[in-house]
Length: 541
Image (cartoon, rainbow, N blue to C red):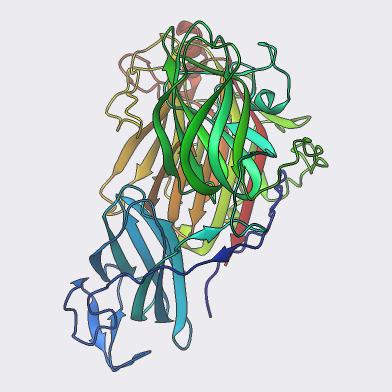
């Protein structure tokens, strides 16, 4: 039978609403795949043992058999940039089918006692070729009859011609964190005063608008903060799924001479989500918008704001029975507050005081046997020179799978963000690098990927998804994915693991008896991490 992701709640879910709308598709062209059914052996494919050509086939007389941990077949195919595609293969047994798009992998697992279709959809982005592949996934699998189809054109629901240019209804607005208290919802409240604005400091900060349904987006009308005294610089992207993004305006700029709305034409696109990426302004590094309207056709044009949804269960009343606490219960109203300096929890092999939640021992399974989706907004209030692990997927041997850090130390060696942001890597200056450590796919160690930078008092949105060993980490508008198929009983932890580490030399203080004196000598007197909008979904196979 197929292995499918089933998003069933374990412990606590802080609300999400899914709106489904019917959309008609015009099927696009098939992409040529060399020897898609392995009738000519592995011609056109690169195969890695243990793999072989099998006579047990879905169509024709051959299929590819993959029977061991390193087994795979792959080939490059030509695609059109910024196009939606669906890859499909028939799988018997168990296996993984996927596409690698400029280093980002999209895949699905499946199969059964007979050949069953397994498909995965993706957008080609800027790529002109992608790598399609089939991988081993815990048992022998046979793969046959690969196809790759472009999605073709999409007709917005309820309007086959989509003529006109009307003010589309915006259901909500979100950002990628670190706003100064002027939040994204201010830009859709019909209040044109300067105080009702969104403001976020730094290149690459984003604000995303959800139209609630797919429509054709043609233009944006934006009232920029201080628009008559400075030019704001920005990009605009759109998406149908809040995952795959198409550029519709790059290197945009406001006039610098208007205090009212300015209209910015964009490439027409079918979208539910519209994202503005701030690239600072001509006077300073801030991105600030007072109000936004989105114009197009095919969607809801009622400007009346949607009613506030009924609140869903919050951290104050979720079931904690699946979690162990390291320190006191962190629930405070609708949030969780983790303060390692207050709790001073010590564990064997630890390197600092903790205040965390972790999945209980009896609930732990291999990364490849579970789907998990953890999301939270995290506010950081920490003294200069502090370093904390905020969330982690832990292997049973305490090895790194995924660890999220907030650090004001001299640590370097980070891969810059996709937007080109470099780490600060200066100790005790009040600028915190937010980064993730991810185990390498070949097991040879780990990599350090910068997500963004911030200062104490700011907050950011964080999300990590483990889809049966395919891990995706997102924050600050960045997203990185990797296959980490750890077979040990791994588990998720989150909270505040305050490192007892010299911020300059990065030498650890090993003896827990010395930690109090260390924190005091470094002037580390504040270590509060506040989690809000928490959403955790878990389903074990």
